[in-house]
Image (cartoon, rainbow, N blue to C red; front, side, top):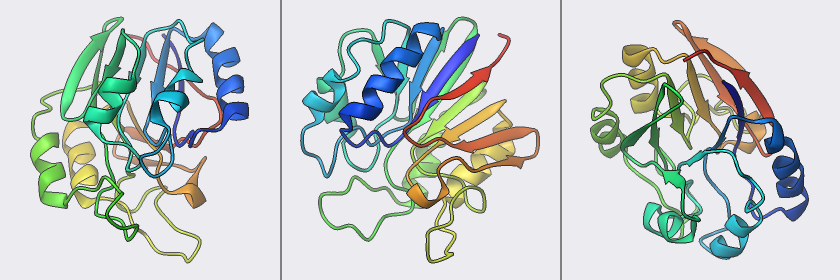
Length: 199
């Protein structure tokens, strides 16, 4: 299966146009959160992706809640937040939001490590784990050199060992990759990222 994945679109029409064009070659499209900015303009941001016809799986970032994303996503898009879905023989599980909580204030959709652990514990087996936040210690470093990833997400990856763990959130680490055991971890960013996985 040919998978196109991205994160942190942040309502960019030019980046959305590139993603929609690329998605014509995809069997599956994954969006790892932050489609809009600070809880504003989500329906318009999601509409930028209407040209994508492949199956699509998304998680909420810290810029939108899961309820807001479910309302704004067109019919047929799978919105995962503590939930799983199966597409083309692959099992996907997703958890959104900023984990641990960000310093951005009341607008940001954040979650404690304990709450993230509770949602991740629902996952008993997975091929692709999609989170908005990166795991602690991989692709999670800010421009100040601080590691701000999630310990709960890292622990889940260590336990579940999916083929892929896809995230975003930390803009300074876009494009960075790493390994946790057998799992490839990728901080996606808003450009096309391609993966091939056999179901």
